[in-house]
Image (tube, rainbow over all chains, first blue to last red; front, top):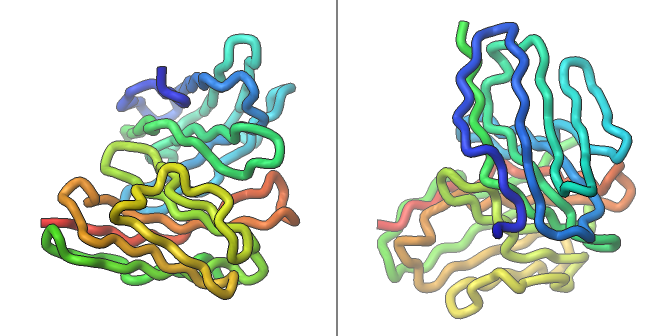
Length: 111
Length: 115
């Protein structure tokens, strides 16, 4: 089993749709979780951290389920500008700042 | 605030040649990372520095890859000799404990093509 696995995608959705991405991780001791956004031929940029109680930032909602070892990202009211690849990243443990990334899921929002 | 700088942005070499990439992290960021991102994959950590010391290089193919950060600021990553499978984007990132969640900031990357 890979350390971090994501939905293979790609996801093609119409504007205004709600889309959800899931990510599972294998290391139960993992401490921190993140969603990054990567535009085509650009570097990854932090979209949001994922907290145990779940967190929301505008149209974006992130959830963590430690028991099942998965995190999710929900995008409501999709915009054309949301088209990008969404990368799940996991930090293995306390004191370690490394990130292990999933392969990413490509989202295309269609007019 | 200036971001992470990397050069060159693109490099094309033939297999068995050598290549070097340079990274200048955000000022004051003690931690520097080099990642390899193969097309269709997520970034994979190659090496992590804390100031001028190596924290983790367990995924660095040491028979051909080397990296240094001699003065704890700039860093270089070298591949010698290159193989076809080294074609990828090499991303440098930096972070500081002072930022929330030790957020890593990525540079624009160097796109390497090995022919």
